[in-house]
Amino acid sequence: MKFLISALEFALSFTNLAAVWIGVRVWEAKAGKLLPADIEWTLYFAAFVSTSFWNWRKERLRAQAAEEMLAEQTKQVPIRRFAPDGEAVLRRYGQIGMGAERLLTPYLDQWIRVCGSFEGAAESLIGDATFVSVLQEDGRRLHLRFPGGDRNVPGPLRKGQVVTAACQIRHGYGAGAFVLDNCELLEAEPALRHVS
Image (tube, rainbow, N blue to C red; front, side, top):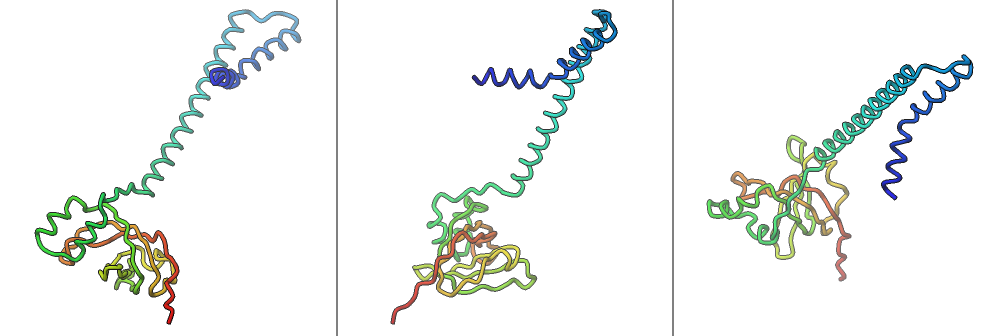
């Protein structure tokens, strides 16, 4: 069935040949004489070549547009490779020294999911990022960097609200073996109400 559909689409892309055939027949009827065979075949050949070129050009332009769109999409959405054991990586957050760096080097530029209770947010001094502080259940405080200033952090977030973010593991350069950078907020659950 697919072959028949493809054959029909191919035949329909050469309707100019039918138009040439009809034009030749109309000319012969009006002139009252037959067109010489070599001229008739030359017209068919010219119509076939021009139609083939037109169809090829149309498909080439379509393929180029698809390639450009795909290149644009891959530029916009970088591929994220998540660390196999995000919890083990987070347990090393804040550690310093060569040993900690050596253990975390294989995880640099990978991503992890971070979940914690929102404590507060502050914009960077130059306004290019927002730093969000979250407190995990075990009492560990994490600092997440959201690039792009406050427009990248949906708000308003409330103190105690449970947030989940995807963050990239980047080298800490003195602030610890690594920092959590390029974060993106995935989920913000309502804050738990304390019953007194």
